Image 1 (cartoon, rainbow, N blue to C red):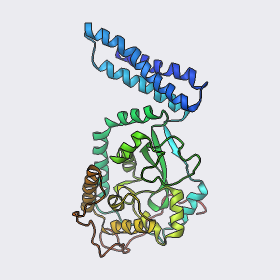
Image 2 (image 1 turned 30 degrees about the horizontal axis):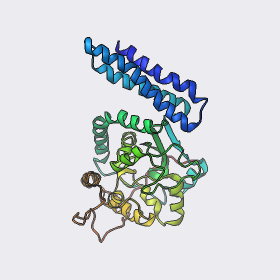
Image 3 (image 1 turned 180 degrees about the vertical axis):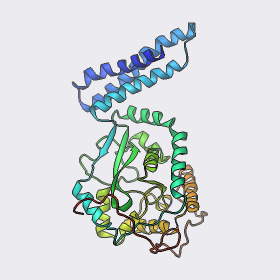
Image 4 (image 1 turned 90 degrees about the vertical axis):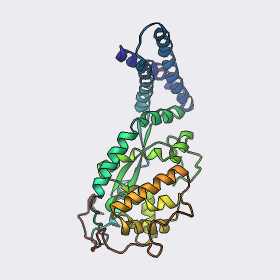
Length: 337
């Protein structure tokens, strides 16, 4: 019985939208998708409540109704715009130019501190297990405000200068950069969805990055990944900028904890300070500070002790164990870089 309820709610969500979306504008189409969702929930929920009053109908059927209606909307969105917005992927030529700045002979990778990868796997696994119940709720809120893709991918630069797909929940309007091209999103960006503002405030839009951590393209702690096209600009203007890509990028980082935005040179100094002091214990301290920063909504209090000594803001060419940095095979090298 429950499966029939789920299937019926999906069909009812799809039928009115499929018929009408080809005949109306994009703005109105979003409202049709919302209305289809609400109508399908109402059509099934009303008789369910009536039956529920007189008969022993499982309460979980109500959850299945909402789930089915939402699934119908997602199917429609996936058929028209996809479920993931792949935003402004860089050309192969741009990726090759970025890789050219990261030749292993000139920018060797740093040794990974012992236990760091284990911390990433355990932390990401626990994080996913605890937060997965929130994902359908977040997806529904995003989709209901603007029917379309729920997820968003940033094409960012990771370890060794290789471009990877950084997963996030979509917090901006679909196709926000269609007219502007790739640009950084400032605080209070008018293109941000209302629910996106709340997601960014609590960093919930970054939950899918836990998948990147499990996949090995990111770490729990490390320099924040930036978009490939923006990184290319910084590589051309900031000496030594490629040094921040000698470790895996992270969800939390020293620079992010202290400021929302900062100039590329200052960000590089903060990232090099982290690279110099990276260890499992330091990562745990940064994760704890990142949680406090998120809860209180401010980057730093005057009473907070500095996370690194103020007289050492740049990294020497040493690895996390104190020895010389060792070149490691340069993964992701493209032909002709």
